[in-house]
Length: 458
Image (cartoon, rainbow, N blue to C red; front, side, top):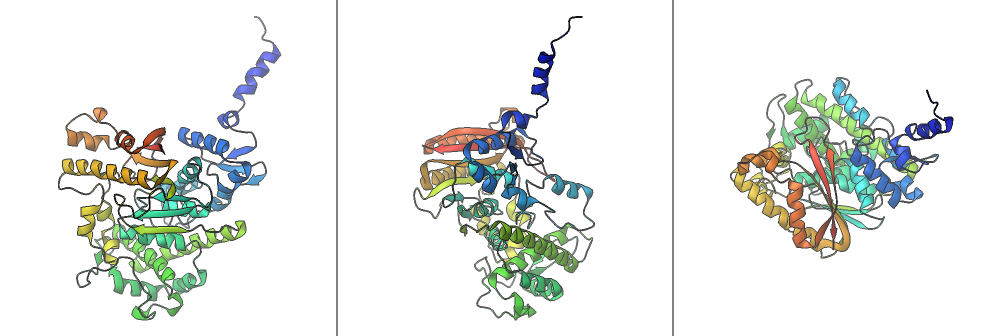
């Protein structure tokens, strides 16, 4: 048998001995653990080409180290993301362990909101859109506020708009948690029963394993985000140490979280659920505030607003980038999911249903037609407020089975929502710059595939 020259073997070994990251990325950059999907690798490659080494250290999403320097993302995510209860399932613990660099860090893990954005991906997309500190990014359908939290930690100003007053309230509480005084929260935890009874009396009560009863029958409609400043700090026996509006918002978010959990589980009493969740909330803000102090991170301004994406309260050409995820049409009824939280804040749910994109209409066919026309109005507004030459990124899931049933055709013949949005956007001075597909992973996801659609404003 003819021998193969040693040098020829060495040449082969040089290629197959390297990982795909070593072949495609500069050797001094180390990716974060768990980077294992094609779209993540593509986003990482874009970050490596767009950002300088110093910017990668401070702002990148998919890199753990630059040479010997750990990135800020690594330091923010290091350690336990959430202080999970002892009785948590192995599946839930495994999810947060494997997603340590992807989700649950900073204050993203506060409140289990459905349809939540993927924080690590959001950070990368902000970078890839060319956003710089001091510029402004808009999320016209902000949901749980992921874009605003990521932007403010990156030094980028942000504006969020959502028609749901609970989303505005939740985002405000999560943003305030980044700098909230810790002693009042520690005091509230020590006086947990008093705090719990205050919110139970004021906002409704729970029956473990049953539907939640919100105290709305005798309360007139009011501005949904509570304004505590005009009320006595001792009203309902709330401790005076917890008198600031920001502290009360944070405690109320924990209470609403515990109320939702008590509806789903009979494992503990509502009071014990509240105590456990407040302890987890305190752990989260203690951790992120310690990291922010160590890194000398300063929050950039963030402005969560209650409003309608079809009628944005912004000037023409006033933002430098747009990043959002529209409602998954009929896949998630956000008002049904959040009914107790909305009622406890005094929101008019009937009026909201008439204005929320994806929920308007009396039957599936009408809902689908209104969804398309509403999304076209939202794209028109995005074009109006975005500066020319900048990017609008949309992350949207597939809904082929439901749309196929509505149209009476096979799901394989249904155009994806991403395709519909791209087609609409061309009428408003957008063109498609890039489209990426990603598999949706997580616990009990309704959608399995999402598309990242990056549009450039001409």
